[in-house]
Image (cartoon, rainbow, N blue to C red; front, side):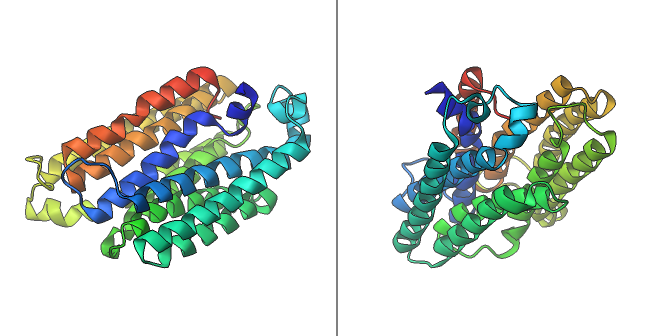
Amino acid sequence: MRDWLRLVRLPNHATAVADVLAGYLVVAGLRVVDWPPAACWLAIIASICFYAAGMVLNDVCDVELDRVERPERPLPSGAISVRQAALVGSGLLAAGSAAACATAIVARSPWPALVGAALTVAVWLYDRHAKPTLAGPFVMGACRGLNWLLGMTAAGGAIGSLWTIPLGMALYVAGITLYARDEAGRSRVATRRGGLATMGLGLAVASRFIWPAVEAGANLAESPLPASNWLVLWGILGTSILLRGLIGVLDPSPGRVQAAVGNAIMSIITLDAVLVLAFCGERWAVVLLLLLPLFLFGRRLVPPT
């Protein structure tokens, strides 16, 4: 079982759930903490399936490289057969598409199904073709942005000016992916710098929606927190992530780089919680933060990268 949990990168699923739930809450603007509706749960199921499919098929496509660089992983070690993993990965991709279609039916909107179709293409494209290319990190980032959109479209409302949030999170994850290249060996400093800069750009874009409220001196949702204070909170969190990444630039050893990547992935949950704080108040933000213990527990079982 641990081999399968490692293959699907168990800890990271908490970040996928956080994205979808945050996307749904941001559009729905829910204030009272209550059991989410069926459309939200279906979108979460779709997200988990897509994420697991992407991780499994990633290792299927990389098995020959992993035999050299990461022979301890489940597929090159023989703990799980490549054929079995390919079947499971394809089945998970189909299950994600089906759940996205079910979300569209329940939400009475075609958009979740269309986003699910785009996610299916993006996952397949990254694993099969784009990963080793210059476009690879941005295709991976698109998967994360589409994951956010899956939750947003499940809410059934208009996205409008909120499009900068999934775009920013897509750039942030593209930066993590670029930063994590060659993490098994001694990393190239130029690659780390480019990844770090892209992460910072993503954080800036994701916070763009708050500027009108900052200029008006408004407060957030039902919270007494001023918009300017929210921006400071976002800046502190982003700076802490980037400083951790800077350590991997100054000392690009595998241990330093992998620690920075793991921290940046885990911080997705915190970033999502802070975004929810701006739209739904403190209680829903705390609900998002409760996904952090799941990530940390999963990380004790299997590595997130």
